[in-house]
Each structure stands twice: as C-alpha cells, then as structure tokens.
Length: 77
Image (cartoon, rainbow, N blue to C red; front, side, top):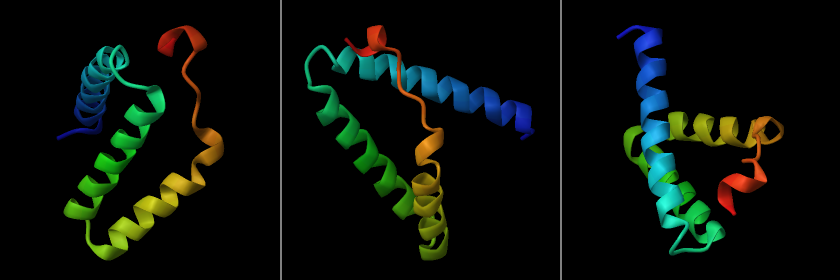
C-alpha cells in the first residue's frame, strides 16, 4: 500500500472514530471518553507491538506533547 493510500485510510479511520466520539459526548463526560480512548489505544499497541515497539511508541507519544493541538472550543461543547 502506498503512503498516499495509508494517509487516506488513516484520515478515514480518524473521521469515523471522531464522529462516533462526538455522539458519545452527548452521553458521557469528555474526560471519561478521552481516558477510555487512550486506554484502548495503548492496549491495542501493547497487543500488536513487541516490547521494544511499545516502548518506542509510548516515548513517541510522550515526546509529541507540545505538538498536540486542542480541538476548537465549539467542537466539544
């Protein structure tokens, strides 16, 4: 699969999950949703990566702290 195809699939996955999360926001607190998504994501990484890969992924997440953008206020309120 080409990088362009991967990018398209990644955007599609993001968009689908984002729409579902917005719907869930009607029922659940945003911090509850965020904690659940992070937990699920880390469990998936732990399942599909070896120990070294998991370590690198969690370091990468931690190192990207300053690069993560907030959603606009109107998006989640």
